[in-house]
Image 1 (cartoon, helix red, strand yellow):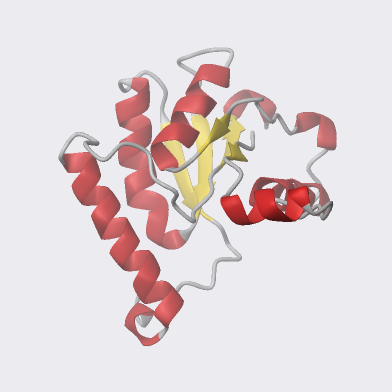
Image 2 (spheres, rainbow, N blue to C red):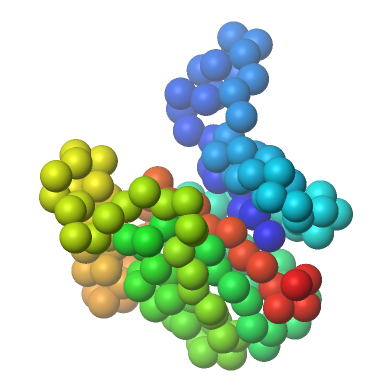
Amino acid sequence: MLVRGARREELKAFQDMGIEVAQRWELSGEVLIQQGVPASAIVVPEEEAEGTLEELRAVYRALGSKDTPVILVTSKYHTRRTRLTWHHVTGGRSRGIVRASGQDPFDPSRWWRERRFVSSVVHEYLGLINYYAGFPVGANGGEGSIRVISEMER
């Protein structure tokens, strides 16, 4: 399952000019197909989501069986928050098996040496603070995306 990201203002401006730009979830779908996942096995709910909390809520609403274990594929630095947020969203009814993408270049032993990774780690810590505070900030426009594979689709 891939969740549509909310269209950002930049993409809307391109669209207004007649320029179509692939969104991240569309690119993820192409990667899955390239890796051998049949297109018919990829589910994309109509709902758009912005940030981890909204993405996982959309996934949970789209699941046929609410107690089905799912595999949540995300970036290396995003696994903890994904696991915690999935448990929050499902009330513990659906087991979330969180795995980092094998293609993720993030190196936890050297993250502070590259600006993009520093930014990602800071974003994750802020997201964890938001989680532990009960999501007072609500959903945000996180850069991470999550691919979900239902155990039943494997």
